[in-house]
Structure formats: structure tokens, C-alpha cells
Length: 92
Image (cartoon, rainbow, N blue to C red; front, side, top):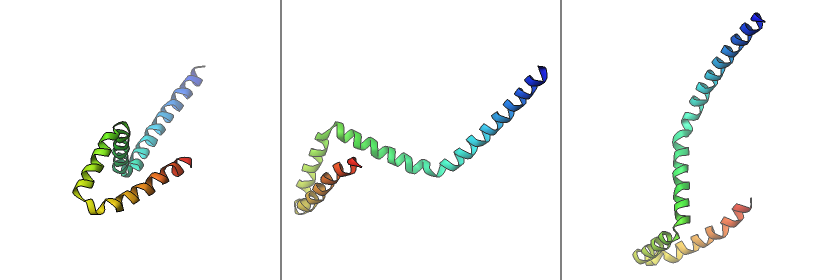
């Protein structure tokens, strides 16, 4: 019985060391993705904010139209295309 406990303790130590090595390797492999994923997270947070406060989007659009009236139609067409593409992308 004592030998079995010793074997279990040794196996446990090996498994703990292996898990630590795997965590270190995973941290090194994920490091290059840290900054891009943080940017994506900020973008998603901005989209959630706009979804909760659509008045800011309308106000920004009105301000944009007031500052650049010649380009408004061009941007409205682009916006309309994006608006139509959103449900199609959600369907996938």
C-alpha cells in the first residue's frame, strides 16, 4: 500500500510539472495575439455602446452631414449597403 502511495505521489508531481510547462508554452504562443485581441475587444465594446445608445450615432451622423454636405450621399449609399449586409452575415 505504501509503494502505491509513493507511485501516486510521484505521478502527481510529474503531472503538475507537465501542466506548468504546458501553461508556459501556451502563454508564449498566445502573446503575439494579445494586442490584436485587445483591439477587437475595444471595437466590440464600442459597438455594444452604440447599440445601447443609438442617439449618439444619429447625432454623429447629423454632425457629419453638417460638416461635409457634399459627401453625405456617398456615405449614405455605403451605409445602406452595410445595413443590408448585416442580416445576411448574421444568417451565416
